[in-house]
Image (cartoon, rainbow, N blue to C red):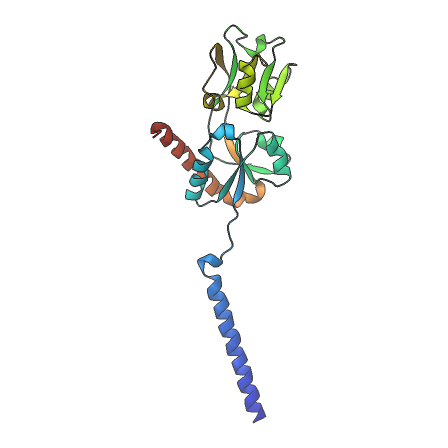
Length: 239
C-alpha cells in the first residue's frame, strides 16, 4: 500500500513539473516576453539637424525597427559622453571620427551627407585660407576638419555654441571669419549681408555606433537611408 502511494505521489510530482515547464515555455514564446530591445541614445547637435529633425530621425529609425533616443549636445561633448557611456552613438561625424575618439566605434556604411566646408568672410576680406594673417577665425569646437585646416594658424577661436553663436559673433565683428559646413550655414540663412561663403573643403559625413552595438548596424544604416528619404521629401514638399 505504501509503495503504491509513493508511486502515485512521484507520478503526480512528475506531471506537475512537466505542466510547469510547458507553462513557462509558453510564456517565453509570447512576443512580449522577449528581451526588450535597447533604445540607443544618439548624440545630435541641434544646429545640424534642425528644430524638428530629431523627431523625423526618431521616426525613420523606428520604421527600420530600431529604437533611438536623440540626445541634443555639442559636437565636442560627444567624445566625453562616449567615454562615460552616456551615449551609444553619434548622428553626424566625419569618417575620421573613429580615429579621434578613445572609444571603439563602428562607422555606418551609409553616407549621411557630403556638405562643403565653407569659409565665411567679409566681401573685401581674404579669399583663401592661405591669405590669412592675423584675422580671428571661428571654428565649431569638436569639428575636426576645420581645426585641421587651420592647425598651423595662430588666430583660431573655438566656439562651443555652434553655428548660431558663430554667426552672431561674425556679424557683431567679434570674428573676422568662420569655418562652417554648408548644411549648418544654410540652416542659419546663409552668408550674412556683406559676407561671402567660399568652399574650402569637401566633407563626407557618417553616423557612428559604439562597437558593442554592432549587431544593430544593419537597422541603423536602414534608418539612416529612411531619414535621408524623409528629409528629401520634406524639402520637395515643405507643406
